[in-house]
Image (cartoon, rainbow, N blue to C red; front, side, top):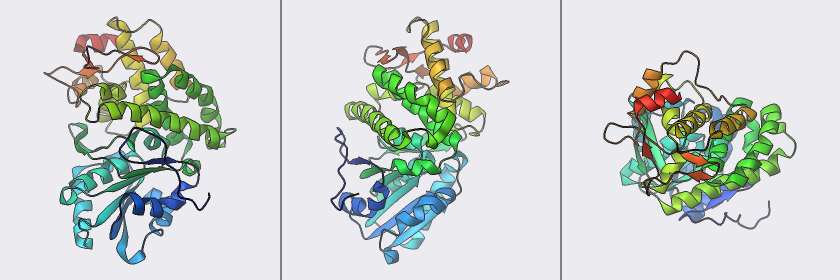
Length: 367
């Protein structure tokens, strides 16, 4: 990488997003430009800290920087961990002159972002996603949250990052199943907005399934695809920053996915849940006459080619799944709402609401 300051992607967002190999070596410089501060609080999990966060922390002044870690896993994204981290920041002496740097997957991005959004009524946060799923989805858009026993991401806030730094080189450290999990959100972006992008992801899916990060031309191809996903999400978010309309299409597959995750006590990779959720919700769209016949089969083929599950887990209770959908953030008037596709690259606008209420009986029948 040259000595010149790295150039961000050209996106319709109020903060810069950097995506290139090796850019993690410039996080200190990027953070100082995007969110200059006296103190830096790096938040990560213990697994990612050993791989990346220690080196990132070293880019900041040692006497004014501290690394805070939590155990890995979705089960750690709780109000208790939020309280623990905010108390630790206070004990360390953090104030409004502090920038939070979130280094990790979606759990860390959501949790650290929520800490930043609430600590002393708001601190700047620099998102450094280290999983494919977080790179293409969670790190962009300003959503922060923690889970509750009643559902996923039910307590949170909109809080834009000051910058997002995506370095595809870190993906070589991911377990293959976690890498494949990230493909689900990329497939989703193709379904909701861009048929040619869907085809591009599909062409690469077989190689990632079979070879992981050792697939031919992995670095160059995955960087291009990450950039494509980020552009799709940025275009949607720029038009609807607080999920009042169009942004709801980003939830395709997630009403069922979040219900499955809750029923299984968050013991499933998020991308796996989204994969089966997309197939299920496409089947719902077909059953109520919104989608063209064959859409669910096309999406099932895509997720299968990526090495992801296309069916709900054996033995799971449909009654439990349907009940869990009523705790989803999009539920209104006691009815679950779904953002549903008409075809690859085309979502149902529902007269500008971008989601439709579906009866429990219709959901059970489709599932």
